[in-house]
Length: 299
Image (tube, rainbow, N blue to C red; front, side):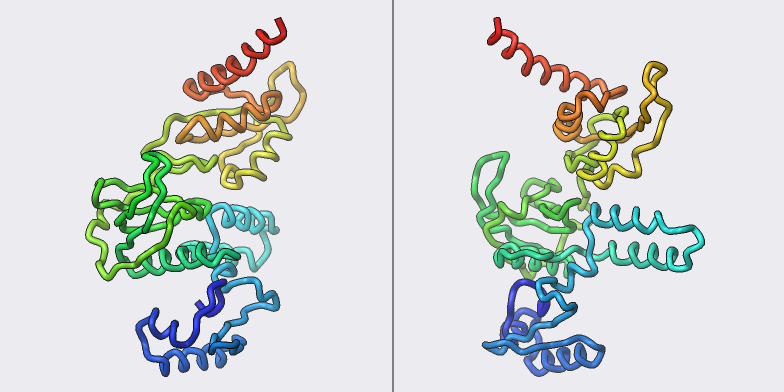
């Protein structure tokens, strides 16, 4: 809280953390003793400086999203096998990624506040009320009582169990008006289930189908850059007999045709769906919708 984008006075820290101001001061001295720099701003606001770049908050230094972790993991893998630091880096990455992501480098105070409150609620296993949540499905605005338990793959949503519907859902952070952390503890932890999310960031109650997509070097590179989690599902394969270009195969499960379909349609000459009847049918339908109007306009 002292290093994030939201600034708190000593009094506000005391109230939010339910501890005396004297205890807050003792913690600040402890931070100083172990090497952190603490400055005192106007209005008695203590700030914890963790790097020379004051725009970085402490949590952004130690917490990774799944995609960020995949990139860092790939960089570690590229080190020489004999590198003595490699095993230690892997272990530290695994430990860090078990932590709950909190507010990152966010200029918007309201968004940072929501992320911090949700993260605290997850750690303390408390229920929250998502005030004035704008639903994209029902097109309504209402308060939602939920038990939040994790953040989505790219940290734009919160995974939570909703007692009223008895369903685990992903709520988009930007659609939450405000977050109120309640004193009530979780009651349905045994029902907490994260919905599957595919490498294209699409989620659903279950995977739709297994697909195989042949990729050129261009498509492979673009896929890895746009969707870092795809790296572990790509292997190099022999190209077709009539083609001497290097080829790769993406083999993975998808939750929806929209993410994979958008990627393949955007690289039609460099990505070919080999397996996945539902995805194939979707792409064929989209191509038909694009080509037929164009054909009629020209004739």
